[in-house]
Length: 186
Image 1 (tube, rainbow, N blue to C red):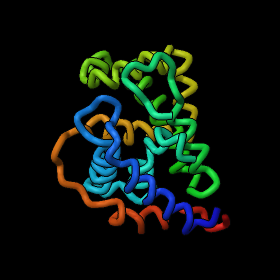
Image 2 (image 1 turned 30 degrees about the horizontal axis):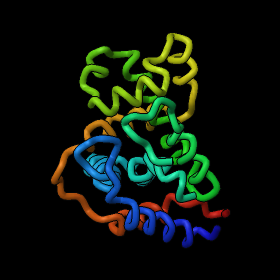
Image 3 (image 1 turned 60 degrees about the horizontal axis):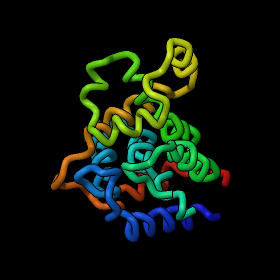
Image 4 (image 1 turned 90 degrees about the vertical axis):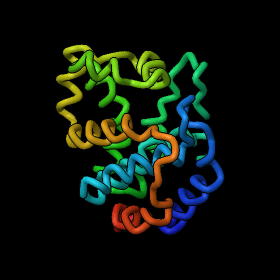
């Protein structure tokens, strides 16, 4: 798939599916993803993190390329699905942050019971499906990943990006960032 087609496909998904409920939260999928990217942009975090923040939950659209339900009893691995979709087209640092953002939640929960207590009900439910807080060995293995700190930062913005009625730029505002995050050799 040509890079322009990837951007168009993502824009189409945001337009058609962005109004889907975000995992039982009070915001839609697009509101959540745009809020996450806006938080990253507000901290001048750079193109890689802004793109990763925008795309971190694209794997929830697995049927576009399985929708999550608060009553799910298995993890649908949206982090892996999203990373696999993005990998042929985007910078490996963006893909890694998307792939590791769920592990980052498990990591932060293992490091801080306080962090875990601040998670929304929906995030606590998905945490249980995703394996719960990491073990000591999993923490060590997670910290061996290049860019694990990027995924932790994306995760922190992810947790804050669930506020109804917050103004954000549109998907189109972030297209230049996405274009700069595309692999040039693909």
